[in-house]
Length: 327
Image 1 (cartoon, helix red, strand yellow):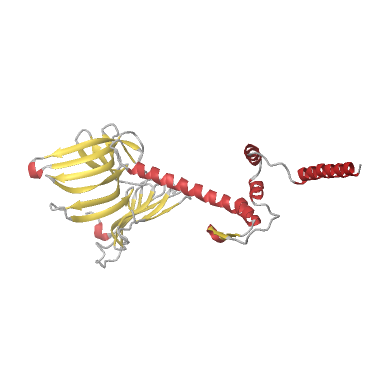
Image 2 (cartoon, one colour):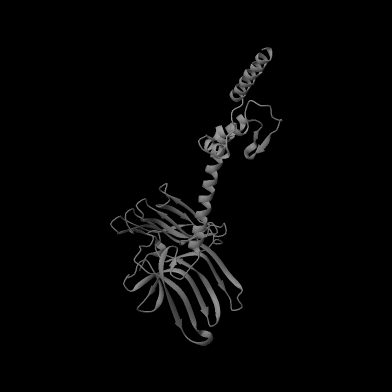
């Protein structure tokens, strides 16, 4: 009887221990169950699931870009939620910029069909023969796009006369704007090369002698020297106010000043920072002359400026200097 009671006691104790063990130690999940559970977790929950916050871990830290330091789970959470999104935005911005640069580089590769995004047509000019032959290979604009109103002289190709001409405007039916690469030969020798953009010199222009020695180099940006200081009336840099010509840092070339409506206000030439030759002022609203001023011949001349002529708004000359009066 005593033996039966002892056996019953140990049996009940074993059952109780097994029950307690199941209550305290949960049944291990299968790999598939753990994977399914982790899919439903947030990023923070995954971190806690991997490294529980209620256990003692060895002391460790890590330095990340931007002087960030992580030494515990809370630091990791903060880094993931606050810092990483910033790096992601920077990375996207850099990728976008790189893609844009690649696209621009591709656009700059001339394929003979388009130049600066505009369709072109190849032209050949040939005159003379042998060593005296002039051979020019160039391109013209294949379309009726309007040129910039801020340039008084444009370069055209006259289809009837088969020649290159400079003018303010031409008959668009028989004249095409120069647009694209330009190469000129004398006999077998390359003497000049450059580019045109809508009738204006653009990019690097160079001249050579018969031994292919560089004689002259100029760099343009759509008709103006690339180093020129250009100011605008508007924030979008569309309406030009003033063009101060500069070549290799020196104020040399054609100076232009405009009214806000786009018409010319003043023009003249500069040489080494000095106004030279004849300068002309214009009334607002058109090409009506207002005043003509004669400056020194070149940078070395010390002549004083002289008002040569003045005109009324209706075009009548109201003043003419004695030195230039016609007999």
